[in-house]
Length: 169
Image (cartoon, rainbow, N blue to C red; front, side, top):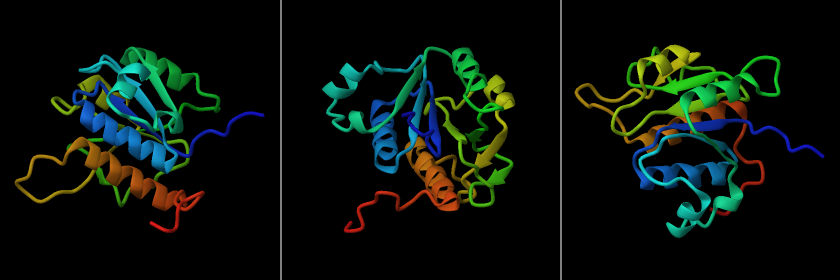
């Protein structure tokens, strides 16, 4: 029996900060979102390193590692669907607010490096550039918070909350 494709994926482009990565991976585990880590990262991203850091929920999240941007793009093009999965980039230069964007099943929501975002070629490759609106004069929200807001909105739109959820929270 084949495993069904996840409703959403969260891609982390060359993450810098292990604590943010841990937060996003925990969110993915809790919400049933697959994680794509595009290396190089600013820290070891092996299962062994994650477990040593106390990430005891690794068995509950699908993590795919890509050793470069080009390998990630090749994987995305080879997806089991007739067309590559849509890449939705979270960026302060986004063209539409996350609450106004129409997410689709199979979307890959990508967040950039904490220190530098993503380079121009990644911006150009994105199928959509989406922003979490913030107050004027503020630079940006923490990448893990941005990921949570975007994933939460996408799951809300797609009816992805509640499947196997713990209602007694």
